[in-house]
Length: 202
Image 1 (cartoon, rainbow, N blue to C red):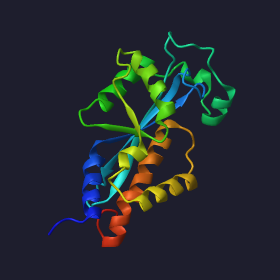
Image 2 (image 1 turned 180 degrees about the vertical axis):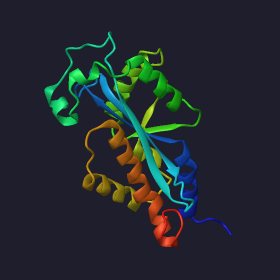
Image 3 (image 1 turned 120 degrees about the vertical axis):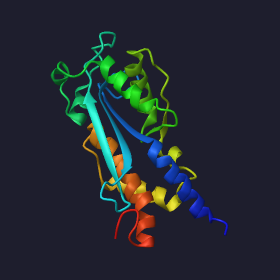
């Protein structure tokens, strides 16, 4: 029996999930000339309870500014939003070490790197990656582009509403996890609800 369009989309979504890396970056200012102060990355994995569900795992790191970055680009408004004081970066991991760690994760063949604000995050990620000679090697796409053709439009609308209702704290790891959780709640969980016990349990 031929699979329905919905089933084909679901199959494409399930193929994407193991390769999806959700990214969030907090920066010294809101513009493209700013530099990253914190980066977070989240993945969606199968729950270890064996019930077939999914969970979001995330990690993040503060970033000690690289000597080549313009230290005058610092916005009190941006600091008020993310709550990261400049002084707290003095003992953070170096930009180069954070870049190398993130490159190891994000450059795995087949990885799809997505965020809810690639226009902002891309120049900040490029600036970070430049410290280890990898500027431009990682491309960030919109989460909506990543999901396009892999889910129903009503699920896209549901996730946008879910994100509005579940605001993040503007900390990189937590915000990346929030994005991953939105995918679980609005794209993976609906099928489980329709089928009964399964992807997200009863």
